[in-house]
Image: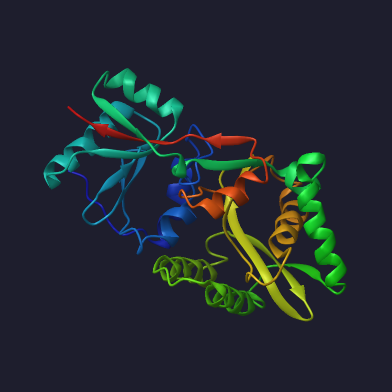
Length: 296
């Protein structure tokens, strides 16, 4: 039996130790992804031997792959057993190619696979985002040029305890600027606030753009591994034209370029506008992820 519990800040170092064994740059393999969304996704976690396992959902329940080291087959069997105790069909979320191969090695023909391209991760070369060279980034350079012409006093600064309250105000303005009333905005805002409230303890890094003394865009995220950073949130009110382009470039150039080769900017969730924005930056890797369903 697996004894799942709600994730706590004290779990961070052990989770990171397990995630260091992961095969890919999946955005779920960061402690922030687990901790920030724990309320929205009803997240529960367990350490089984030297593996970390996550379970999401109240009714439509799914599991992470067991991430760590040791007997992978045994750990998956424990997940299958846990699902059986709950009376549900075991579903493993975020299965990349190498983990699908492992599942087929140890459970040949026992899993079916569901693919939704809205769950794929967008992973970029940091140098591309920092330099925006070539014809494919012509539009981004134009957006930035227009922004700089219209905001001659703009500045970039790193996130810290002193400017986090202003970033919260910026996010609130983003919500107000939306033309719909999606309840997911509240769930996201709760995750954002959790990140800000525990910013130092979570090891986050972020940046902000200030214009006329006011923060008009911010972003923050964390290290996945020695080569990849994951950006959890990036926000600017819709009326601030070019703000997304400038915060994206400046953060990549000032905080990521010297330490990372890649930045994972997470999924598009099948949202047309978000997909268009993420594709416009030309990902180096569009990380395919599937859901594996145990058929027995």
